[in-house]
Length: 141
Length: 186
Image 1 (spheres, each protein chain N blue to C red):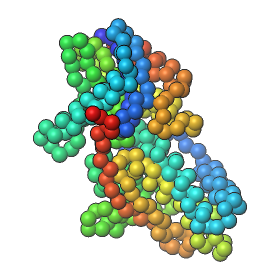
Image 2: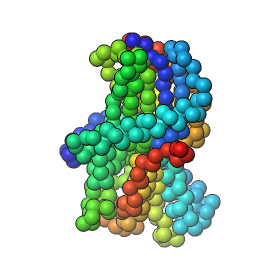
Image 3: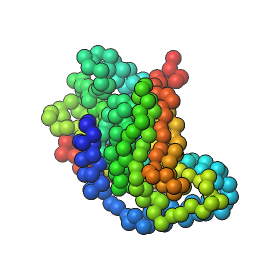
Image 4: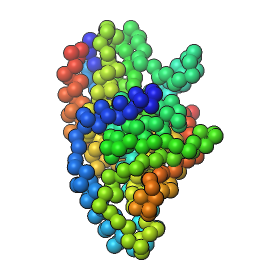
């Protein structure tokens, strides 16, 4: 298994951060790509909630195609963490990784950075370094 | 989650996080308020500034609450009230608040807490009798709620510094913000 890329969206659909590792196909128009991605995620969550037999909102955890798996985690504040991996992630709990990225990386290097303007793109080097380290250290990388 | 569970959760998170001494917090906060009184003179204006400062803190602090308490879904306003009272208050102030005086629609409640570490060592002189000394809390709550898609109004209604027997903050839910679909979607 390997990790392809990571996206972080805020509730307004702004892509706050993007990173990629082993992704051979390049994205041509990144803005367009993000718009498509966010729209899909938004509807996916809506769809999952609508189909649900229970009232509670239930966001998807992942979906899978023969070539990749998309892992999804969102917070009550509307942040969406997405990790694309190969489909052979087996039983490893990737959602947990995303929660770790939220609690240990985003929280410490973005929320607690007083110079970060909420809603703007994340340019912090410390953030991208830490994110990179966490992802590379995954047993499944 | 039930009240008891939330209380336990609040306790656990409180125990596991880094803390600073209550004196340091009280004195730092006190000097901030003092400086605001010097700068703005009018207690009303200071209340406003404290609220605004709190708001800026709240919109960030909420992420810390969620990440550390690991509460990833907030299902209703009633639930959220208990989380504020039992988890968030415990995490940052070391005290637990009670939610009282719910209205019949369950859109308004009061947070009641006897001890407020921010007001320790403080006495309110007569000329500042209009000051809500710990008004920063209102701003923090308002900011945090806004980030989880609920617009609330928050007002101090009782403060021990003014001679009341307890501290009370009234929280009124104005609007549940719905998640909007992306705007420029053709």
